[in-house]
Image 1: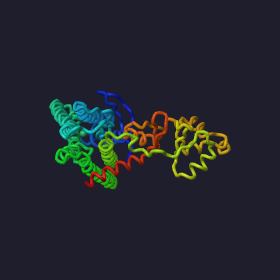
Image 2 (image 1 turned 120 degrees about the vertical axis):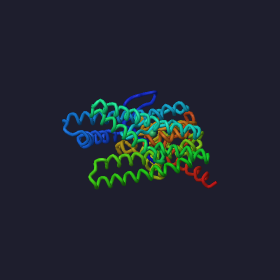
Image 3 (image 1 turned 45 degrees about the vertical axis):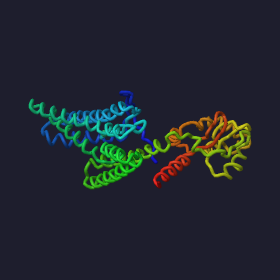
Image 4 (image 1 turned 90 degrees about the horizontal axis):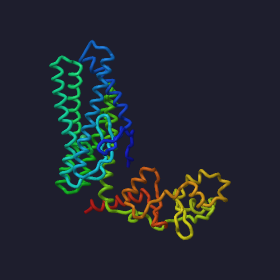
Length: 379
Ligand SMILES: [Zn+2]
């Protein structure tokens, strides 16, 4: 399971936070370089390097703006269907809108999927008209830039028509399968498999291009990697939404875990708890069951061995702020899972008020999902 990628925060628009994926810079540089050194010198000979570079930067920026508009198309329709879009991560060749939840029905899904390519289609027409106008006015550089923009936006529509989730074509196919079967998870499963398959094809094409010493090898490869992780995490998200809907931490947790008395010195904690039970963290509690903190094996490593007999488990967790490594029993399981994935912590203590109620691990949630999806598929 992959964690969602972060990227660089660039700003807010319509309440949506925009991020640039780190691959953006690499691809932006390759596209600008290719335009300025290979494409424009061929179609427009006898100009200076500065002119080619300016044309390359301008064309690349407008292409990026086109992608931003494409993603805004998806997002605005999504918000109109009542589904907030908290963030969009932009790649150079596209973007991934993080929807807060799945659409309510296949019709909304279809509308959201088509909105992006619809915006791109309008842009193709506008750029083409501008190219014709500048051509008629004999302003060759501008005419070439806009005709290039028209063709790359057309290519973007064609690429996005691939029926692999989470590409637009994949979302259209998902909406159609969903409408037919009524099973969103199954529809997501099928289309995300196609998405992963396509990502391998792209990476393979990248390798072939590399052997032919073509610059776009890296672009193909990066798109392939991104598509693969997006397809996989898209499916996991669909599962979370469906299987974990309405499920609380208390439904998934392991109740009555082994706990460490807060007054126990660390040397005894190591011998009697860590070395005899095979976990990497244990909750520390007072005699009345009040939770003090989650003692992780790293906390022990940081404390010099000669201090072990003179430090109590309660003091150690207080010093490390380990009381924060907990979640409420009534918290939603999906939210707990996001925390478990995001913070790289395998487990959290579960609290009922002040008292320890259980332990929840990534494994608990994955197991819960596995059992529920397999039972459903068996029916
Ligand atoms: Zn799109």
